[in-house]
Image (cartoon, rainbow, N blue to C red; front, side):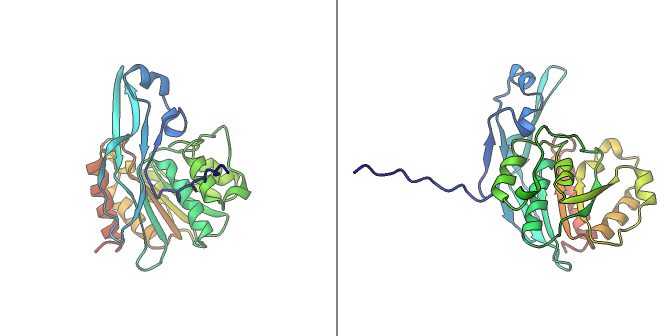
Length: 257
């Protein structure tokens, strides 16, 4: 009798690296223009490791590309995403490269019971990231982490990952911290919240911002958030600068000693 071919189960989300070969997610951005400029049309997504010290290492493969004045610009991602828990609060913390991956780790925090539905998001970023993707995430899919992983790596990109969380009820609202005015006027939330930091807020072109006040606010936020995601955003800030600022923030918050 013929043997039935066994179907291999999908690996757990972010347990192995993967490639984006179709024009979707971040690979869909400027895809045809990138191909004409010499891109292979392949972007890489790292696997995730647990590391209590959240040590970052740059990968060897492009995680983001753009064409500037006719020239292809390729940006390496992280060798691995890294996760741990806050040593005092127990909140999950994950560092990714491209920001859209944060959506998956918010869903994971919900599934693991770290956050309930409907918390506000404190979004620290030089960009709003509030574009609306063509396909939204249904609330009943929030607990299907394999589906969410596929969704994050096919339907959303670095500028469109927040609206799906709002529309699905995972998050209730967004409080933006994107400039000196926002940091100066900011007061710590009195209820639980999710903290999302894009390290591009420390990019050189924003050096005029009050770094001391930013660090003060972020120290307080990191010490009270129920879930923390951090993006290194390779297109918007060089890896070495993002890594240096992450180390400063972790030391400020007492997460790395």
